[in-house]
Image (cartoon, rainbow over all chains, first blue to last red; front, top):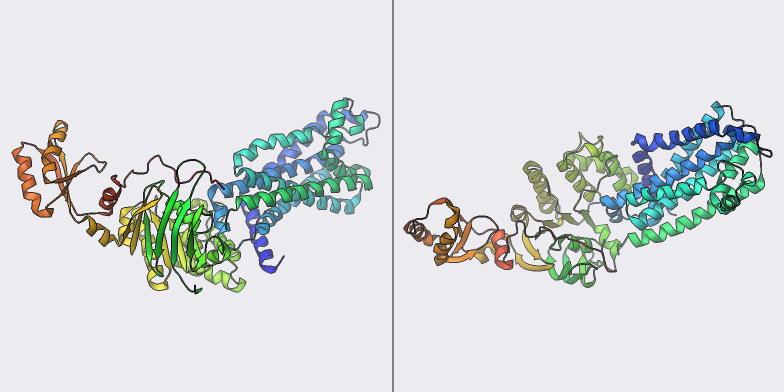
Length: 259
Length: 329
């Protein structure tokens, strides 16, 4: 990537951040909603910790992993909706008339999403610390958590970008959002997989990559250093990222019909 | 062809869409360096599709076009490097300020870092947005958005400028200000301007030459004065006091020239004998016992040219038609 392309990535990332932070709803909602859900769940499901084999006696610590994934899902929607808006308003045409490289558009948008993902991660970690969650992997584990937040922001952001380039419609992306949430609810978000009593649900949660993303974050919070959980979590996050970025690149090529 | 060529040369350009007829149906045109070319036509005539092809954003189905000496299909990046464009909707981000837009645009256009700020300030000053530069675009008026749009198109000092209906929806004052700026660009900087419009006055005032497009085909081309001279004869627009007299009035006036349907409530006739025939018209109306609410003589306008070439008035001719549909490829 040469200097001109890097400058383009920087300029588009700056724009992505500016347009997000200037819409308070786009910043506040992804921060507050997952924490509200966390507090409601940990209040209602605290008795789960009494189940034999439950990995911790704090449901709050157990469930703190979920906001990281929810935040990433919000990134999907925001990145996708923003790009779809650019297509609908003709802003993408404006950029297409410059010497912009396609890679700069995707990378710039994702860089902005990563910054927002890190802000979200910092907020969730801070809330966890304030509520008394003890991060088992320590300060280094929190750093790894930030790294993971960046990776899943890229992966889910690329998914959002793909949907935007493919559909060109913000409404279509918002319509797909509940579908992404289904993946979250059909995962090990509320119960460890080995304690899920319903066979089909356990099978779905085991096949669902989101379970491994949650378990990666969860391991750093409640277990400490768990190589398998980290490998599976980062592995799936990177895999989703590669597939989504590749799909987004092809979809962008199709969308940019310029000669 | 020399790289400094600022012309636009189009031959047999066609664009087909999946749904509907050919949006652009084999047009030929040539725009000379430094010229302001007005591309006039109703909604759905093919103006915007032509601009999209000439700015490399839409591949033609067939035909060739060279912009600034470069082929729009084979040399897209070179074409983009010499053109600026303000497309139909001022595509701006309401969350960014005017200065943010210029900063982004100058980076994307590869303007040297040291030059970006100076160039942005110069353009903001030029389009009269210095004071509003740090306000978000969401709060700009339509005219301010259009002026910013123009500034963004000029960031990299293009040799050719494409403006797609730049004054649609603007108030008369903003429209005049934009005309002045476009005129200055062509006159002082030698920029070739390709301007689409559905406003007769805009084409008349601003364009050195006008191409009239209808249903994807160029139906007339020339300077505004030569096109009007082609029509030559003035027309009388008469409106009877009694609605029931309309047919009788048309019958009386038809003796003095060709009856025209201009889409309004007036009975219109192009005077075969020019202004010399007017007294006879008045006498005939009087003899027939008709009372008129209004009687106007109009010199030939570009609308008359459009009417003569297509049989329809430009005003409202394209209502209900779309300019673009799904591409076939």
